Length: 282
Image (cartoon, rainbow, N blue to C red; front, side, top):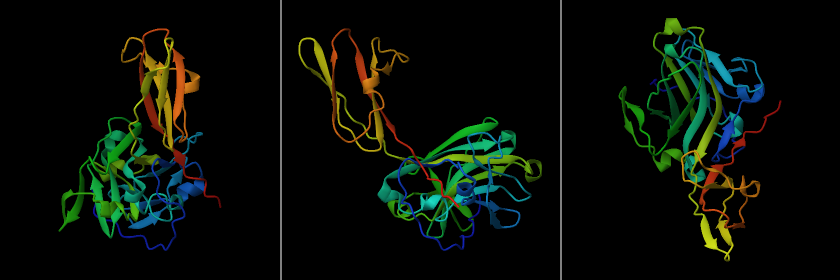
């Protein structure tokens, strides 16, 4: 884990409030340029490279190691229309999710998330990479451990409601085993996402008549609902009941009637609807 970074001396205004399941896909060079790379060699901030991993149709933010001790991708109010700063507590954001890239994972000692609140940095556990290429990184504000620095020593920290109510910076750190070996090796970031709470909603099953069953459930905005069925209750036996009961969204209660043709088990799958940060434009 790294020592605290200096605060960016940028006066900006957040245009978008932090919202659960918002993601930065780095689909444009301009969106990518509004994030920052901390250069451990010079102590300065630069923009990430855009779409340099493979130059394909799914761009990302990336950079290469220099002579400094690591790479930090960070967002502040100037990044992604301000989506990744501000009041996470009020918005119900519970954690972070992103895809990370390592050209050579054997060079990477650890990767971590970090937060900045009121001039104090907080760090996730250092996580290790098991393979070259892309990996998924996920972390919770409430159920996973966090740390801060006191008198030059890392100590346990509780991410309180007060901290989450006012975040001014957020990001991901990459640290190599040996700096000289890592120089020029590329690391990247994509699909940086704010994770919220996924509600549990009961699927109610009632006997409509002698031949039919009524299936019903309530819905909340920002989620997709699919009724799945399984005749044998096997792990791999779950499938969508029908196209009419797949990927349903909205806020009105839903009810459908199905024939009691065979014995079946039912469950309700709930998935969040993700919202990409809009293209910023010129």
